[in-house]
Image (cartoon, rainbow, N blue to C red; front, top):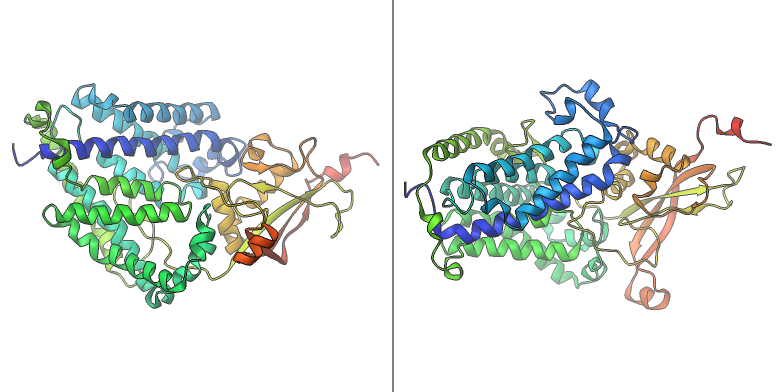
Length: 479
């Protein structure tokens, strides 16, 4: 069955699988370290409460059958360990069926997490990891040649990621058509990185070049993925370079890294790899051929909804059309903010919460807060609370379900919640009151940075949440 495999892509498959397993490591470790405060049994949006109201068919998950924090932690750490083993090449040391089983377990475990993760797992890169992870199950291992159909399906994913993002920009904010969006984006993006300040201060003509290059990369280059080599490799290389530019300019969890991973699957490494191993040139088992063909038909059938969405004038971003996240639609920054507002959370131990009382600010790991603190690099690790705080600043409606429980846990001194923060200003005892205020942030100028050492400037706008205390706390305190 020479038509079924492409032995020359054996090195490309190896690179793709190792990189994808690395992304899985970050996803599972992040879940293990953050879930208790976010979705644990006593978290802000507890899984047990969620699964009581959402049926299995709408959110298939192992945790629909049984949930405990210990079980969740075990699944997350098991996923991290299995991912690390695949990074080290464990999938090539076992029979083909066993390797497929290992990738299937990863996909099932992460699907179980995403489908009960609620708001905390509503990002497009969750679905992207699941879609790509599902295809990885059928990509085989060193004991069989890379199946051509799956390689084409991976290019189909990459095309939708890039082309969908390009369309949503052209249909969305007018600044993309005017080539001015990057006048603002580096400053207003969800979580700036250590170089974002410098990117923001690039000359405006260069920002316009950035915008134009983005349109070319997302609207023209993806079509070249379906052309013969070496053109397809050049197209993938351009996408990799563009994604690395985004890696340096901001923190987008693993979105850029998984896009790079999928792009690498389209690169022809034949010139570097030499002849394929003998095992990769052998014919594929009949059951494997049948299974891959069936999956290909399934993906093509499920693609009708994403395609209809892409060509629609009412295109939406980051939507799953099936509960297994098999084929999804993607996009990013259809609208770019011109200003940056931040929610600043403060507490006080004063008995009376006066406006000018002893209010102390909580520090977050990634979101802007302290003015002299240079933004840090966290991606591909995903700081979920920090990301949701960016949405909370856009509108209180985005935080309606979780912000109140978050404040309650600060007032209770919940250790799991405090571990999500960089700085707790009340190390000995929790505060009596917590409040939140909205500030307008902007990057400082070159002159301001030299004179003050501050990366940010801010000014107060209004109250976001009035001083709040735990219910019944006043009755329990001595006079």
